[in-house]
Image 1: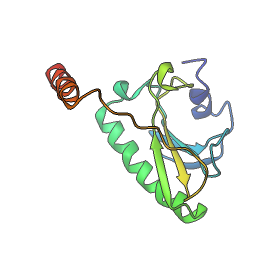
Image 2: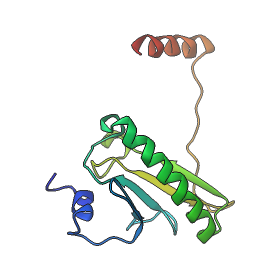
Image 3: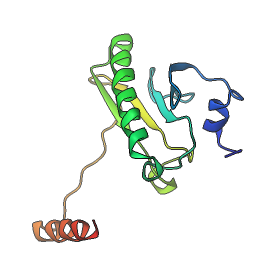
Image 4: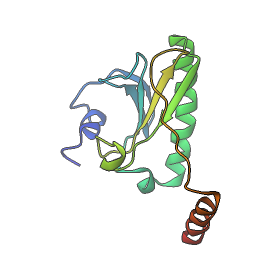
Length: 136
């Protein structure tokens, strides 16, 4: 994709603060980090969302996230790490190129957790689970 900023980074048209590179995966510091050490892990080939990624590549990306995550812990002194992937605009995906955010965390860092809610009833929860199961 010509207009994809991540494809431009992969092609060397835009510089990045690279932390990991292989033939199929690239990891670099987010230019607008939530906290210091916030890293993005992307496939070198353009895939828009998680559902577009071939399973073999998704598995390789998981291995890279584990490796890079260890480095983030060691260097930043983080005591936790959020691994986040936003898929589609309504979920907060800004760049339509599949990517995971590795966000180092510390106790009391001020970042708010996602607010959990409750189902109307247990029955409603089980009905929804059954519907999702049927869709598989």
